[in-house]
Length: 300
Image (cartoon, rainbow, N blue to C red; front, side, top):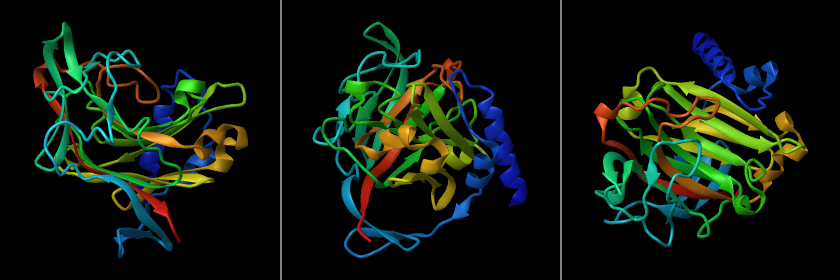
């Protein structure tokens, strides 16, 4: 266990050297927050779950138990070339890139030259339809098969994003994963400092082999309140970011409503993981699979 702990801390510090924006991560904070904790998450009565002595009630969900496009009462599509110098063009309501079938949401990146765009994919979000503030957000997903360039993510942005921009809106990356670092499950928080510069925390949970996440579904989740964000891989709380790590000014965006995003990017560049990186075009298509997305609010 201690070897795994120091291995993960080393990877975290190594990743931090890839920064291209302000990254403040005191060593003591790393050591105190990256000890993995096995935390029982158990179902209760009436659509509740218990995490330790805390009880959460289900407030919103998509079980993807239908066929066709994602439920328009729950999801909207992002379209175009959106961010991070990514290669893919996000299409709008195109079944080839995003559909629900056999109880799963399938987000597929294609090298198909649709609409004169060589690479297409999809990004969906609850923006304008559903927001979340505190509680437990859980998405059960399976990563695409191996191939460099893939960059699936499950994340949130502040609902005021259009008004204040990034990073003032805040961002919680429930999970990012890349085909170029296929044993690393990364949880991150992005916030502004008092001057509006970006401050972030990123920490990896390292699995034993790529097949752990590419061949099986796992629960990627956060437990979030006014003082901290806990990141989970299944029942393992592998890192916690605390209010005190950043200060009141920086933490403020995490005390507001956020909306949820699911996407499969290709290529692109951004710290701390460098984005998806060079794409292996021989391995298309790539598919990011999601079994459900759920939001629970704390009741006890």
